[in-house]
Image (cartoon, rainbow, N blue to C red; front, top):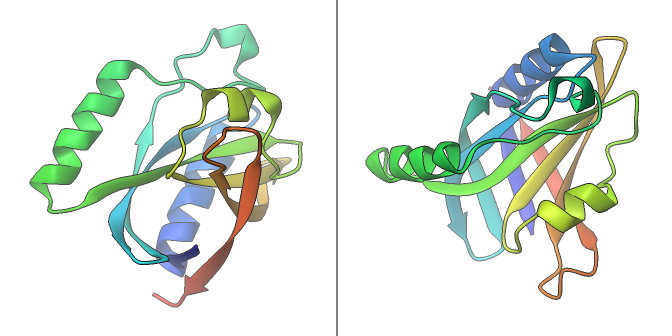
Length: 143
């Protein structure tokens, strides 16, 4: 898959995740899927509801967040295409925890954040058999 994200949306994600540091931050990706292209058109930050003492390496949202965002996406004529989150002081590579809680057919953008600075964003998709993530091509376009 080819994931298209504007530089403005990427910078908005970076600002949110840098502000969440040293804890993980995250949110939803809304857009459209056409063939092997995912066009991200909007991001929505969601509060990390994981236990406070574990938020430095875990991120969670409520089932109500999922339902609300699916409704919001529908109302805007968009699709819930994925999810983004940070890995504070760790590589932008999915963890076993990420794999165990991921859904196939979603795009996952993971950003490494070191000392409040976003360093690297990578795109991933869980294999249908849930055995591992596969890298996706992330295309960041101006504006």
